[in-house]
Amino acid sequence: MKKERTSLLVAVFFVFLFTICSIRPVIAAPGDLSRSMPSPLGRVHGLTYGNGLIWLADHFENVIVGINPKSGKVEKRLKAPGTKSRDITFGNRKLWVLDREGPAIFRMDPDTGGIDLKLFSPVPRATGLAWSKSGLWLLESGSKPKIRKLDPSDGTTVNSIPAPSAHGNALAFDGRYLWVGDRVEDKIFMVDPESGTVIMIFQSPGPYCSGIDVIDGELVVEDYQTDKIYFLVKDDGTHRARYGHKDEKLEFVVSIRNWGPSNVKSAELYIAVPGNLDSQKLIDGPTFSPEPASIEKDQYGQETAIFKVENLAPGEQRKVTMKLKARLYNVEYYVFPERVLGNAAIPANVKNMYLADEPKYDIKDSLIQKIVKKVIGKETNPYWKARRLAEYVQQHMRYELAGGWNTAPRVLARGTGSCSEYTFAFVSLCRAAGVPARFMGSIVVRRDDASRDDVFHRWAEIYLPPYGWIPVDVQHGDKPLPGQQADGFGRLPDVVLVTTRGGGGSKYLEWNYDANAKYTCDGPCKVDIDYFGEWEPGTKDKAAGYRRLERENIKP
Image 1 (cartoon, helix red, strand yellow):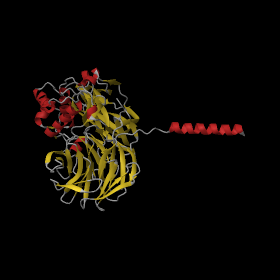
Image 2 (tube, helix red, strand yellow):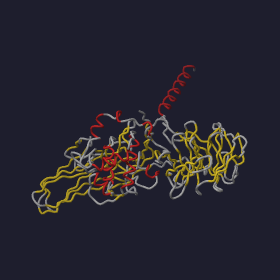
Image 3 (cartoon, rainbow, N blue to C red):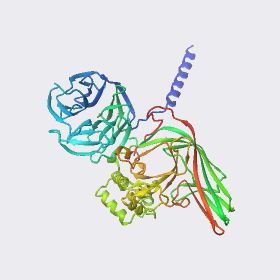
């Protein structure tokens, strides 16, 4: 009996051990939910932290309460100074309450509830309030949203920066960055207080952010619709994370047609071979039909399938195809500018290859040098160099798909360009400023999961030590508001299959991406080269909201 009991305990132990070992550890990333608690009030508009308490303002009950940040227990209850509280902040041992009536800003004693100052807002659509040692920050919503810095003694506007979005509803300052919650886009923006540049974007944990602050290194968000207080990871050292996914089947076709009158003596067709990246995982394939003559790597390490065609008669057409099934992810890169290292930390091989000049970049051109000098000034941080150059390109160019790829100086002088020309301009400026840059090319799922792509898309990557290569899509981010512009910096959506990574003219693809062709004719001939991708949807991640399915916790 004793022996049987011992055997049973051993079996239970191994089952327990197997279960523990089988559990995949969950790694948090910035913006992930760490915990939540119910709000003690039902209609909160405003959250802040001070004197060891989380303070909440209820615009319906006209009360302000202080709760224990661990238990959620109400420890202080005050009458609100106005009738429609909009936001609340704590600074200089006082509570500051933004009220929609007026709108006005009240300063009150957190112990007694006494009011000793009333300021009138300089704008009618004030929606957020935050304290800093140098003054009050006031968030203004609308079609031309702003964040104003106010003199806390009289409410005078000292200066202003653009707000990240039109529907900002909550504001906080953590001593370095401003944080803005948007109730319509359900996003939280990390904002540089000097320029208004949005550095990072998190998904709001609830559908109606109505209060925000940073407490003990966590981002704390009050949600008006769910009546909950959410505690989010602000920074745990994670460099990037991917979340959500959808599976897609692709058939990529490259064709050559000879209209004559002479034969095509020989031709080579090239298809860029995609691989596994942070943003994609190949499930099946790629497979080719017919089989390529060879698969070669160019000087940038890009694999390319090479197909040979001989004696193509007038009126004849040949096709080659690549088929695959891929899982496409959304990817975010969490770059804190103050942690970006200087050029000395960039590997020598990266410098040698991705700071070099190329014909399309022409980095020694006087216009390129002039722009870099004007935009960069004395800035030494590679992150801010790249952000300022991206903003310059977006401010001085507009999208136009006119055919042809001009050099970066001509594109910038002209002020219009395709996605490739935006990319060439940005890469040129970055290299001239000492920031290594290259390009990525892709086949795109065009809105519908079952779709055809014959336009494709190209964007840039920059090298920022210790983070590595970061995607920057200046054309995608060419939009009016800072929050929209940040969508193209350090973020990739789940609608692109990256086929190509290159630094310049490839041995096989030349300046093309996805595919290329070269041919010779016996005499005069007209030849058409065509290529396109046909998408067929597979399974799609059904996870609601912003749940990340896979994470990478990559530290320097």
